Amino acid sequence: MKKKKVAIIGGGASGLLCAIFCAKSGVDVDIFEQNSKCAKKILVSGNGRCNITNRDLSRDDYFSQNPSFVEYALKEFGFSEFKKFCESIGLLLDVKDDGRTYPLSNEAKSVASILLSHATSLGITIHTDKKITDIKKLLSEYNSVVIATGSEAASHLGGNRDGLAFAEFFGHNIIPTYPSLVQLHLNSSIVKKMSGTKTEGEVTLLINNKKEATSSGDILFTDYGISGFAVLDISQRASVALMEEAHVSLSINLLPAFNAQKLSNHINKMAEIGPKMTIFEILIGLVPSKLASGILEELKLPASFCSKNIDIKVSKKIANQLLNWRFEVTDTHGFRHGEVAGGGVDTTEINPKTFESLKQKNLYFCGEVLDVVGRRGGYNFAFAWASGYLAAKDISKS
Ligand SMILES: Cc1cc2nc3c(=O)[nH]c(=O)nc-3n(C[C@H](O)[C@H](O)[C@H](O)COP(=O)(O)OP(=O)(O)OC[C@H]3O[C@@H](n4cnc5c(N)ncnc54)[C@H](O)[C@@H]3O)c2cc1C
Image (cartoon, rainbow, N blue to C red; front, top):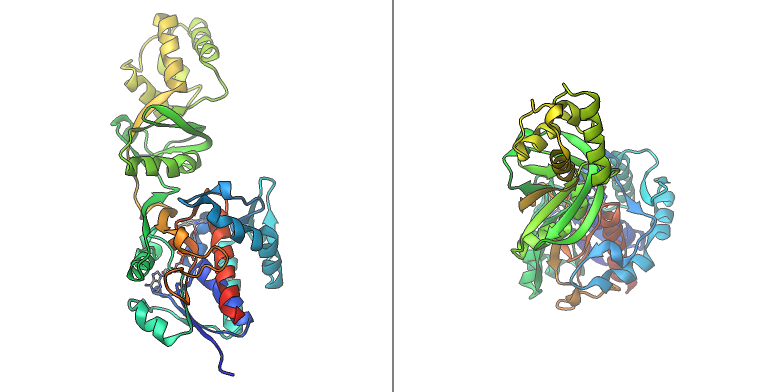
């Protein structure tokens, strides 16, 4: 009997996993990858460590216009199924207390190497430097075609809209795309002067002046605005709101361990102890110096303002600024800098159990090309693996 042939467009996370499971079932697999090598995003993921999945996966970790779409995939090829697969190919995992999971080697390159060597040993043919443009031709040459082209995020690593164009060719609806897990641009001249300063704090996102989400962790000021894990974690909602032309702003709390009263008492006490101290000198005991200067510039107080002139009104004003520093968000830092993209192929037109198109037989979509985007924490890879697996299962079936 003639072997079934599948063409997989994209040698990233979902394409590689799909290829491996197809080949394991005896399907002839060709991967077409536009880059000179596969798995570029895997290689840079998790700051070179690859947050490969998460122990705790649920639909609440994803954003999509069709939230229930991910449920079947996460159930069928969730954490334990993926872990078992990794162990079967010698890729051992390190599960952190919070559920984030990394390769035991702590190196993203081991994930890419092991997947690729496994693919090669299964006889999968990988055509690198091969950008697919004619989807119709490919579908006429193969029994099945899998579109695993990823999203527009990180264009320097291969991110593009090709998969969306292929989907449109077959009449699929595209949910508007937006960058996610992305840095934000702020409307502030002061922020530029604080560029390069990293601190820990709390970021609250306000949409049309209504509190929408809060996250804590690293905050990094840059010459265009703001970055850091706390910012990436609220960026999905900020990005959608900007796309919808809502008013988006941030409230930064630089000292979440304090309340306004405690902080203003502290400032007053310091002023009492050191009447010759400047306000700047008091502030650098609390926050990095560039942020201290920024706070004073925002309040139009000179750095040399003497402690003996600090009264309750001034200390309260400073305390409020440290705990609730408002910035208007004007934009995201764009697809090129986003880790992922939301929106994509409308999942109501995809079979959630097989990932086959409901518009075109033998055409499959998996991974980030679909309108599914995860939170930070290994969720995006988790969906890429699960969707690649289910597409392979269906392709191998008949
Ligand atoms: C800097 C960074 C860090 C990240 N870290 C993490 C992390 O730690 N944990 C996590 O869960 N997620 C992380 N992600 C997200 C994760 O990498 C993606 O969600 C995941 O790779 C999506 O898999 P995919 O198979 O859908 O697409 P991709 O992995 O992007 O693969 C798509 C492939 O298709 C190729 N391609 C596109 N068009 C064509 C064409 N026309 N012809 C041929 N080939 C084509 C591309 O070159 C690419 O290789 C990170 C992303 C970035 C950018």
